[in-house]
Image (cartoon, rainbow, N blue to C red):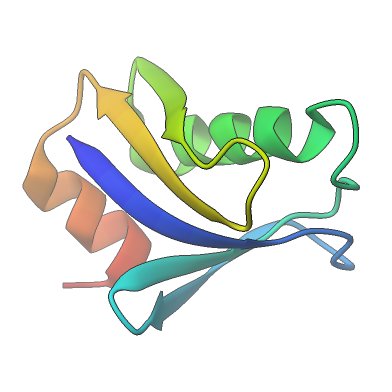
Length: 84
């Protein structure tokens, strides 16, 4: 399953905010340098959704990213990330 996200780096804490337009807004405490924010994003999504794997497939250097989650159902992802 692919999830479109809007990442806000350098936040006070890492957490899922909710929907922002058609993307899931996620605040990350890591800075956007040397892939640190992407690593933290992947870790947060795995922990939040219980996915077995998460990979940034588009937007590695952008705030607008697409992340592919494997080993988890779409309904679970929706429930955990947007509460539906």
